[in-house]
Image 1 (tube, rainbow, N blue to C red):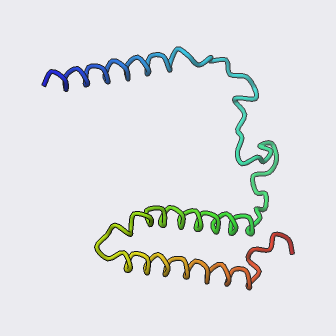
Image 2 (cartoon, helix red, strand yellow; image 1 turned 90 degrees about the horizontal axis):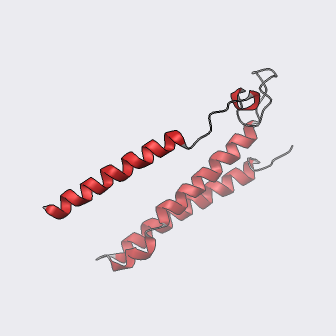
Length: 116
């Protein structure tokens, strides 16, 4: 019980110290550049109704989809330690085939073309 109380006391003291230091450390000298709104690299002084490239967002979503695929397939090397590793590899193959077919469909429809 004494070890648990020591760990709790250390974590409370350390988090309190870090919270206090985080208020003292930053320099609070706001200037014109820091106070101006900035978003996505667009000039904040222009019109707020600038046209966005839809192709950019489609390619970004496609990138996120394949990034998610990597996260889903990351535990696959540990699948051979299960009672039925063949089933695990089958479902992983199904995911890869579906994503490959989706990529081929996007490619044939011209969704990956950056400029027309």
